Image (cartoon, rainbow, N blue to C red; front, side, top):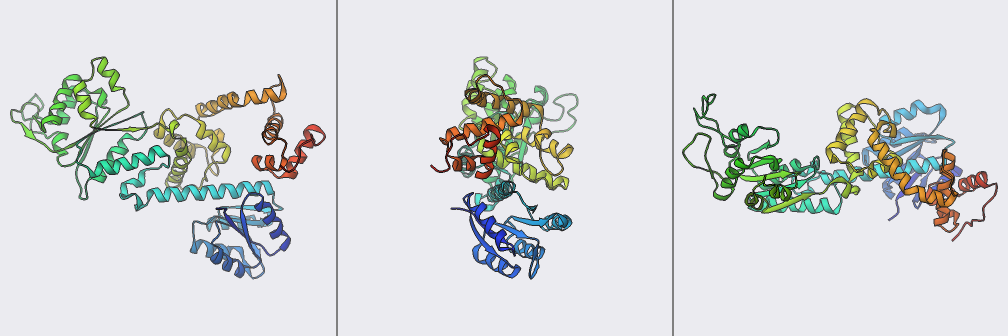
Length: 468
């Protein structure tokens, strides 16, 4: 269904030219020439975006903006203003306008601004939905993802939470969100508060890990001056999360297996078996199959842990989630740092989507936080990103585009932006078999702009046609 854009401007020629330019982008338009008519059309048409002139015959565009934002704060509003009214435009931004364009405006720039505004609104809507109670549990507010893989994981979490499963094994690369999944399973499992205990098996020496898990009796060792309960006992009725289970020592694995098999354990130095009813959720980024072959992980424990296996795919296998996550982290750190950095431009977002994110969501969070802390003030730029992301994207672009460039230009290697622009335009025209209307739409420029660029490149029209 095409998006509807409401144009509010007192000049008929401007409304007409805007409607023509916007319709070329596949949008439907509604127009109004006064503030009162604009508000009425807004209420009647429920547009997806509003283009609003600052000065109207019966009032100020700021007054219309206030009404729009009061009635539907999710609708993006782009203000149209003269250069002399920049201060007023800044005031409009404070009142909730998405952006402003100065007259005389560039049609190409306006189209990009509209596209970015609608994309920003879409991402915010999806994040709001994922955070809403529609997931059945408030803890899912922390999950961001729309890929089939993540939707399946959400479904599995809810099923596991409702089940009586006591052993779950979560696998996935470092930073992919295994702890978050463990906490979500716990949150879905109980209506009343229950304990959630966690420990990273890789960060605690084995002798200390045993005491932390199972506790100890008074006098069990030199410093054991009082009895101490371990995490297995403290998590009674709730969940014990064992992160990096693959790093647990072989001797301690046998004690954990006993807990899983018999629901009993002994404190260090104890002689009495204690019964426990604790759900054990384990996680690892290690290949436990290989660890079994290397005889550093018990095979019987492995099969006991993976009664319910759950694998979290890396970000590079669910790239459709990356724009949502980027938008989520920008919104989060904007809130924390008091900034208003918008979602990145399409060029920056494409670069972020192409990057493989070996550190997954944790790496992404750190990248966005660092960029907003140190560099990004009004916009997130390519230069604000780490060199490994810029370098990765450059290499990939070279791999993808070099053959096409060679086909177009022989042995010529593009060294300037003009060269790259010419190659991209020629490639697009080849793909559309010379159809300039389609090529212009793909490139995001007007047909007239395309004609002018072709003329500057070749001194003529290079024999392409306007219609299919």
